Image 1 (tube, helix red, strand yellow):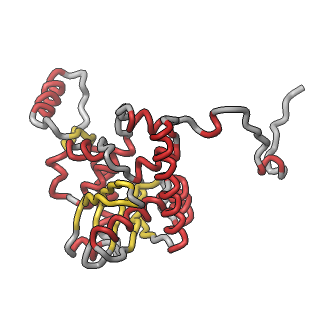
Image 2 (image 1 turned 90 degrees about the vertical axis):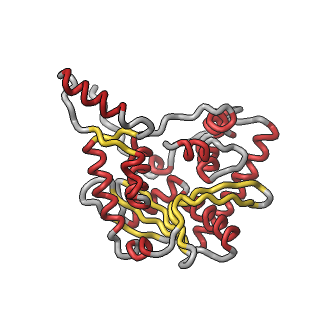
Image 3 (image 1 turned 30 degrees about the vertical axis):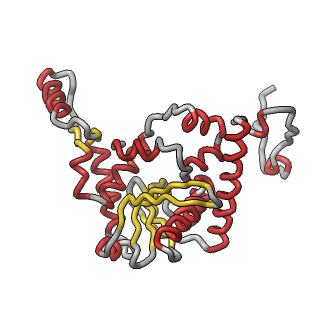
Length: 273
């Protein structure tokens, strides 16, 4: 992650969509990360996503930010020397293996030639656009993959294991992408003074590299916006009370068997006598 990205993600003066998603997932994790500043290392999936984004949106900057490390047998002194020299001449760059680099490059190629996306690569665009804005007086921040102001379109790239409509719809629900879409649409509305469309382009990270473009309906966007309002209110209350525990983590909570078990869909393994 670049210093610019570090500064953006560590900025707690304004609330981002990713912060609200973490608050929804676990208030305690939110507290550790954004109140105590205990930032976690980027996962391999996050690193792959960042590389892919760079290849799709700013291909001219790929080799300014990344160094490709060839596969070497480090048991040999000569290879150790080559590796050391490569790292010495690549200070400040993120290292990536040849295999991962090629994987990301292939995926990025399929994104860039998608017939819905490709025309937008030839129009005026803002890449990694930061927008500071307010929701109900709450200071918010956003960083958008690609904004095309003339067409009033926001593009967001998502890597996934399965880019089919049904599978991606589940990803939207699992990861709260409907909140992200509503959040970014509101940001652009305030920044540019007009309504924007929000389009996902989902790309599979492995062969056959299938790619789809998706757009949420107004009902889903409204649901995302109301969830944002609820999470902002929760954030405000937790900051005042300094209570970062889950609601269910105190007291005795009634629990029952899940519906699929009660319906008889769950088969109990036979136990040998």
